[in-house]
Length: 282
Image (cartoon, rainbow, N blue to C red):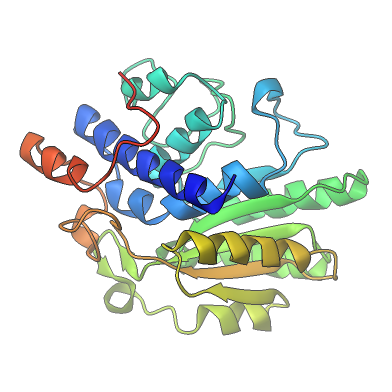
């Protein structure tokens, strides 16, 4: 896609997010809105994948694992808009017996989802194992994962980081959504994370930053640069700085919209700031 097409897609994904969470009156809009550029650039440009022939194995394709599974609205929208399942199914978000549960699961066999996530800290272990499996099977494709910065407070993340570096898993690109917010407040108030980049570097990773994680050009170029850095003996970590709730002025920059749904009036205010570019689902 051209840059303007990616930007238009991200705008529609943001509309999907607020409509889904409003419709269910449950969900996590803040982190989802902040990662719209990342998911758009990844799924519509960087990821070598086949939505039309999804299988759990994913041989010969790039794989993506969402570790902070509570931002499922942005994930589901990107999957639907890229062709994994009908866009109209977004209307069933968090519905009983539906496939689009609040946190992604595998029991419902939703195309695009290869692990259940939402129990924070586990995704990097899965991604590192999948990437090592590809290397052992001489599969040249990449493995991507996404993590929240607050999720780095989980110890399992650092065990997986040690493992990936120790085994030279250099086909792995893991992105940290560094928005400085988590459910109970800022990460600095809850448990300061220090210098995330230096920590991953000290664990043996090749680290880079995307300073403007809500600017499509920066995200697009950052993901392309990360891919160029693979194959050099180290896993790659991207520290991506985003604004929680980006795109909706009253949701932006605060942890308060981590996990609550907008009212009818708030939905209208949000949609008034988000252009309909690809057509809303019904």
